[in-house]
Image 1 (spheres, rainbow, N blue to C red):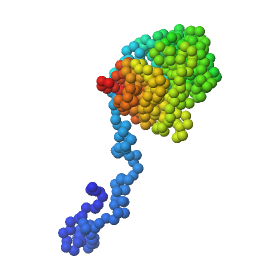
Image 2 (image 1 turned 30 degrees about the vertical axis):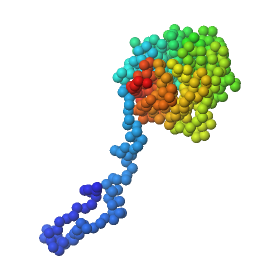
Image 3 (image 1 turned 120 degrees about the vertical axis):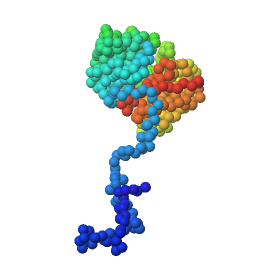
Image 4 (image 1 turned 90 degrees about the vertical axis):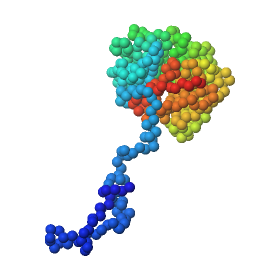
Length: 423
């Protein structure tokens, strides 16, 4: 395999005495034929080194196993405008044709999911944009950064119509049927505004972070706090209807809250490794769900003393709930019996889950950069999609569950067309 440059080329000798007369001078240069001389291992090593082999050239031109794995790209559209990690993504609720993403580059973008074209660039933020979403009618989009600067933009005219600055932002959510914005901050306050009028209410919780929140269909809101307590707020009256704390509450900060379709049931998740099912009319805890850990990549610590719950959700068509854990376990529980039905194991920590609107399929995104679909009836994986070279930090499905839009730590957002065989 070694060609020119590695071994000297033999010289054909015409003189029988193996000498060459140069310009007729008496100087004799003796040339030795090398045809039968075997190079030593040291000589070969030196020649290889001179040819550039063995040098640390950054592996240019060579594919490593990890690089070959990341070449798989099942996505149909890639949105490349962000110059830092993309932290959040949302779809416009009316047409499901526009996405909004927020990133580490202190920007949010509204863009078309069909071709990735920018519709609106949301600028002027002071820090990473960690929250972004559309209003119920898709006419407005809100973007919020970690410093607490919140901006609202009118999509049609591409103009900023309202802004406000609060404490460090934890979460942001639009009301499901009104131009009302609800946000939680690190000082424990929850703010509510009518946009763009600016009418404002504040809901004072305990003196700790309001870590998660959800507006319910009946006009109430459930908010989880860093101290493990859960409060059900009446948004019109501005008062707490129920407070779940102590042994009924969580033993660590809440990470997520979700409600069923009519808001009568709420599921909360915490870093304490538990998910609690709460009946909202009475504030009573009906059940506590928990499961063991399994040391997946992306989990916190090797001992996994606390296997954090990262995402929860209610199935829309069957009495099932899903709980996603940081150790990579997706647990499917039966609501009627409160029993564990399936454990769907991932190789990396789960970041977020979402049920399809009209089936028993639940989708997950993970720290190993994959989207997976699971059939909750059988506990088996339906399909898997890859394309990110880093973590997926957020994702959402469209109404038909035909598309998934992802936000990645690799500075990209992607659109995946989900194949839907009969199932």
